[in-house]
Image 1: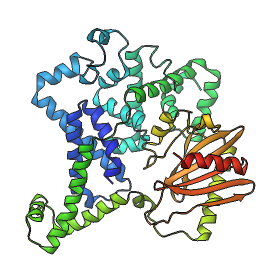
Image 2: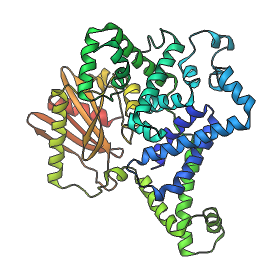
Image 3: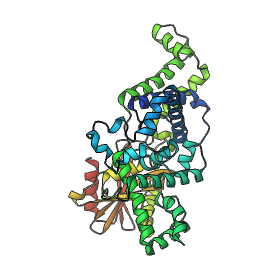
Length: 166
Length: 270
């Protein structure tokens, strides 16, 4: 119940933590924890169980990061909408021209909104699967998603997404 | 229904989370309200833009190797513990997993085998099918194909772009079906949907051929199923079955036999 979901686990960790090295460590930690507790697993959805472990591992790392380095965390999360990922793709000046990229906008969302958007739009999970992974009621998932999308549209402007048809 | 009521229903509608009555109410409103229709379009375009800029990623090889080694270590640790065989390598492994009770280690090893089998976890049936079961499966596949056309539920994700269709299955089924567009060969990809066959969720892909539709159902082969193929017809529908790359494939359509064979040939060639 671990190996088939490694890619999904890494994708979640990478976009939640916004750091490739942190994501690698988080996925490995989560797998070891899953192996450790696998024998006690009694639910009917092993994937959601495993992904919840991945999600919780990421949350722990994020809060440790915030506690351990207040100034950096503050800087990262509040002052700059741009993180390391976008750094080498565009000259710095272009980052300031609105609208920001969709990825920047998602990265800037509060963690509760970000994880809902990632699990829904990238992983394609149903509301009830997201509820299991995140550990909140389905209604909360629904309202977080709606609010997250509204926020993204506000940040990205009325033209966001236009012409992005495939 | 008013536009205000729509604001709480539009997101679950876009996400396929409403029941049939809700879908009906929203659809009726959308037909007569350009503003809400535009909001829906923006929700969908936002999703497309997110997937474009933040694609699903593959776990780095080193992570995969690390995790597989950990699973092997659990496995090796359990046999080393039960046989109590001395040796430098096993001693080290034993030390690393010493915090595991021996019985727990054995069950973990079993669990790791289930991971390796992958499909067996869900399918749970590994014995070869009988002839009657094959016929029943063929009937179910044809019925599903017809039902998808009747109910207008041909597609959950309508797109000719395999880079849209393939990731759509990610998270909806526990495997990754091969999705290829054969537009150039006269079999354009129409999209995909989720279906339920053989007691499990399967991936269904729809391809066009002139005005006909070809449904392809894909799901993982149970571990010990033998490799074989079949070709048959039922009520004017032609059916092909084969296995490739650890997957069961069923193709159903009312196109000419030769067309279906050509299509199956393309799919097998990928």
